[in-house]
Image 1: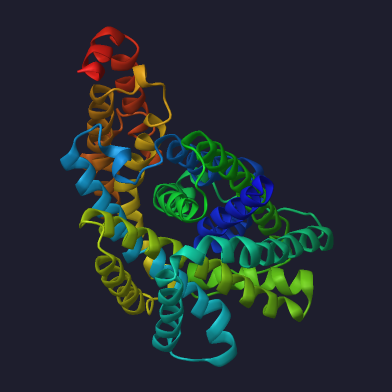
Image 2: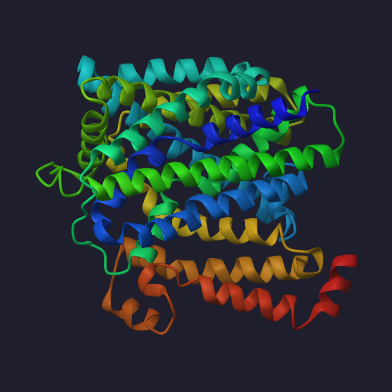
Length: 435
């Protein structure tokens, strides 16, 4: 085994499974609206779109199991429900969203076709790749990802050098908090726990090395993929900010069209008429690889849940693809709006599970897991309710919870629960862990 080649293929494959529709469309508009504060909004964005996902891959390297292992210390019942929720959400939102983005940016402007045809052909191809999953990582890592990275660097590099490097006034009062919440929409933390399992299974198909060798390979791949995400996100946010004084998107009908048209105009400004072609190919490849990773991960989970049945894998992949065709006909912005309350609920729980699974065992006992997850769940409820049905009564209650105004009211209570139980009562925790 060529360890360097294996590392590069795994890193590229992981990066490509992460990098999808939201990863391309969200950062430029975020930078455009942040203007002079683009650096601070980028810092917040990196927390939830880069740092947490990297830690998620490190947790996978340590566990080398499935998504079920992330929550089993809370309880087997909780972990089962959490896994089903995560995979249903992944199939219902980020996977169809990749088809919607591909249609709106790469297909409709050229062919003017119906979204049903795009999503049908798109998910038929996704299904072909998923059913040949042993070849997924190698093909994506060797061919698709290098092409995606080269195109992205061309758009960012030429875009930065060809812009006037002037920024407009920021539209955000709290750019860091805005960046953190916008990072939710990339689904990268959820992607870390879903596609991390895909990476492990794909590695096991090709690599018969020891547990420690695989742990090192997965961890290094996570760092490399994370560094790649950092460079691309920072580049896209800065390009969006520096073109803020040159490109007008305020006359677009929706924020969805703003995202698509801003990225298109930046591509044309940096690469000329060839920019539209580059953008179409880039969007299609980035979205496609993410959809493949999500559906393969979902099929893997239900296959393992039901006696390792290959038939279950095939049926799950088909159902997920059909669902993708149906939901993929919606426009990108509609899917984002639907996703917000779901993310405000599931993202905090996912983040704390990722963080707890990389802590030393003495500080990540079942008691700590249960306390932190319960506290996170309780303090996430006001954020969800406040988004769906805001009221003055709820506002008066939540004004006493720090960071609630940023939809981050769960952060400090979860930290207090972790420190209070994990640090102040380590003997009881160790005993519970040993039992």
